[in-house]
Length: 144
Figure (cartoon, rainbow, N blue to C red):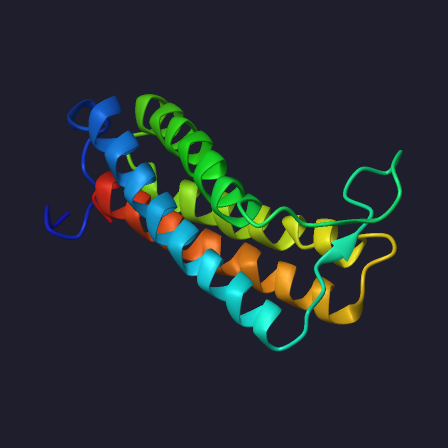
């Protein structure tokens, strides 16, 4: 097989490279999601919902889109590291898992109680905005 077409061997992928890639993707996602949040607020999205099922509806804290982009990025970096340690070509399985997780994660915002349609749509968009740069940067580190 042509070496240029195959993924980097798992022995060449280290924790540092994957975490740097994950954090880079997470920072890009955080900045982009803060922009989406700001645009949403500017056009009248209230970002109110029952974020804690045991509590009354509350507004989304303004810093949460950034935090909710960075934490999954680091977790995805560790998942990618596990794939890299277990698989010879971890990029494709990681990409498939990322897409599946992205689709499944839409249930969160779409099922948010006491939230407006605008809130649900923009929060769902934020899941995509977070998933794309995180996945792309990690795939780059995996050699795909």
